[in-house]
Amino acid sequence: MHADADPSPGAAAFVGGNRVQLLQGGDELFPAMLRAIDGAHRGIWLATYIFHDDEAGRAIAEALGNAARRGVAVQVLVDGFGSRLALARLRRGLAVEGLSFDVFRPLERWSAWLQPAQLRRLHHKLCVVDDEVAFVGGINILDDRNDLIHGRSDQPRLDFAVALRGPVVAQVRQLAQALGTRVRLGHEWRSEVGALARSPRPVADTLQLLRELRTAAAPAAPAPDALQPVQVAFVVRDNLKRRRAIERSYIEAVRRARHSVDIACPYFYPRRAFRRSLQAAAQRGVQVRLLMQGKVDYRLAALAARVLYDELLARGVRIYEYTPAFLHAKVAVVDGRWATVGSSNIDPLSLLLNLEANAVVQDAAFAQLLRERFDAAVAVSQEVRAPPLREGWRRWLSNRFVAWCAHLYLRVAGITGRY
Image (cartoon, rainbow, N blue to C red):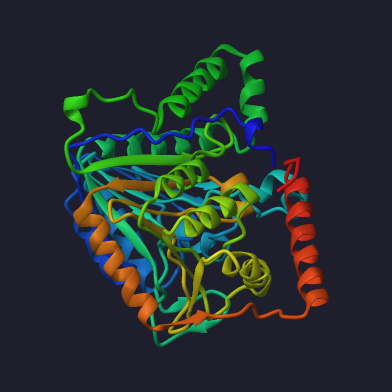
């Protein structure tokens, strides 16, 4: 893709005065979410890719239903593909007065599978309670030891989220609320905008939607004296004005790195500009470490990452494969100061198609804690010393195959240009 083809801003807008708590896996996230939901008084907004009907999902669903019964306004939004296996039970279990349950681009009719727009999914994992606390990260409403493809495992997935308190919470709530408004007005953005020309009420509703989507997670720059620790930016990737916001946030942090860059990501197939930023950092003496999947869930995704190993290793990037369990974390730490936790992978789906959200934190204490968790994962991983595909023709063929698949997928979804 051409970098200059996207007008979306790349700079993260930081706001200070926040508190941030790192949460590892559902074992830490779900109890914190349940405490917040059980204590809610006014409103709850939840948006997630997967909301499954297992023990973890049923506990969250029950808490949401109880909150609605005691008068709390509850809005739940799930992705039609990610949550498709549990939709019928979710609809029954969440059929509570005062609880709004919506599905982003549902796939319940066979014709829906033929629409290219269905490739663009809601990949957020967000929950906001009473404008007091927001949970942002990569953890779905799904038991850590339950994989929807491979079944049960002894070890939990490696994954992270953050609990946010402070001014940044309002930005997360704005986004979650705007997503619900978008779905209720219609699943297709073109039809929503087309409603402007039809009747006064749709005009008012669509204008309100436009205002919400433009302002969600895009606050005015704070005054300098407001930028007190902990500084947090809520960075969103959408298909409107912030199409490359998360990617640019990563690239800018890597380009400024002086000492270390640590990235954990299960699905890694960045475009050339991203790869060059990592390679340039390594060649100027920055320690660059990538933590990838060692226990593979999707073979094509693993192949996509591995065809890049030769290029990255040759320029000083160190690569580790995490083998104790499935890796689902999408986190990074740069120079022990800049850190991000979110839903976005570093691949074409997350960087160019899906709706994604990351929390970016500028705080030494938080970055140190996340790096300690990263180091612990690296300690039980296997370092890749040589690319798995040594023969030139095999490497070339695999690279061409992955590039063709990525290109075809993006073209079907309506994205043109080179990746």
